[in-house]
Length: 216
Image 1 (cartoon, rainbow, N blue to C red):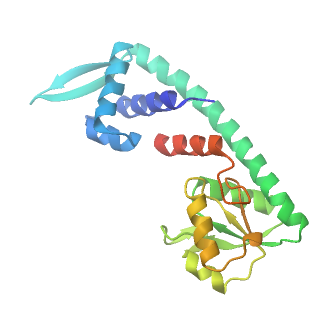
Image 2: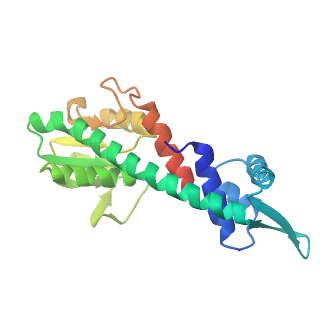
């Protein structure tokens, strides 16, 4: 698996390769870390010989990739592609395993909570297993997702569904608690990242998901 440092290096090298004058503040936002940490990451890349620093009048700093940096970015890109394919296969396998039991119990109509990458994989897996998707709910997104209108979580009370899949690793416990407060039976709810008692059962997968979010 590609570690977090490698992902950060790849993001920084990709941004700097564009040849545009970017600020450390902008890079910090893309990395999702503090400004001070971004400065340390850039200094590390300079020490390794991957980037060099030039000054653009008036007193502006510009980072340029060296030939060694270009080679390192290519290597990291290949590694990240392998990592992404591994992640994709792993998640599809986990989703199938999570949904198999509800399907055996008679679940045919599925609603999905979330609109991220995991929700997209869940949609594909559900279709492969012959499930009918009722729709997506997400309180933080409006519009459509995969051609389906996105509704608020509160609208679930008006839907007809047999199973409800939480496709959000980061906020799964909070979403589960809210669904239960809303009166939705736990027996209808499944999640790739939660055990039956609502505790996280897949912390390693959560860290992978968080790493991917920082890579965007």
